Length: 238
Image 1 (cartoon, rainbow, N blue to C red):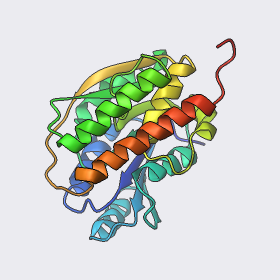
Image 2 (cartoon, rainbow, N blue to C red; image 1 turned 90 degrees about the vertical axis):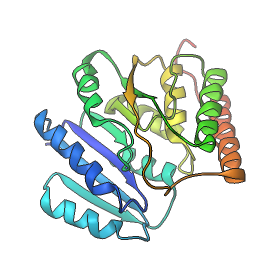
Image 3 (tube, rainbow, N blue to C red; image 1 turned 120 degrees about the vertical axis):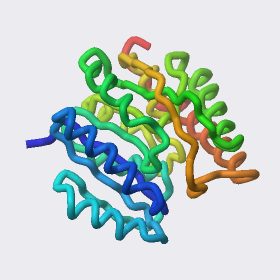
């Protein structure tokens, strides 16, 4: 029988943080007595991440590991979404940046919504990441309409049936699939809820974007969002 919740977590070179972050999530989900699967996608890590994940899976029967050659953060998230089972899917990152305690309120509110998003507050992100966030937010507003503030938040609980409806509209190579998912949620009239979630400063620099790389990432996210908006089908009656 499928679990009630599948947690999708992309991981890349997070040896310093992943064990603590995952342990916090497992403790919380067990306390809430949720029937869950916790799936960690190792995107070709080159540090000791793989060994740490193997130890976590050996200790926790609800933890599963999926390993792959490096595809990038976006395609890894999409793989997780497409393989997820159960009624609900939750996506978060493996660095422990966002407060796990906020999840309980999202979970208890889920019956009234299709997508519940943790809006990042007190975020001490570098300029490059703030640039991508700002470009993503404005591109979704222009292409799909208002409705969500933190369109790329890696802290989102989505009704699986709704997610399966829109996944075919998101290309496999999408740089920021959560941005497109936010836009499609607005376009298709999903019931959406945002709740502030406190962020801690990152303690490592892995996965950081800077300089021209950040600019290229922002441009790529914008182009893919606009292309999906123009080419994708609209809901009936739109």
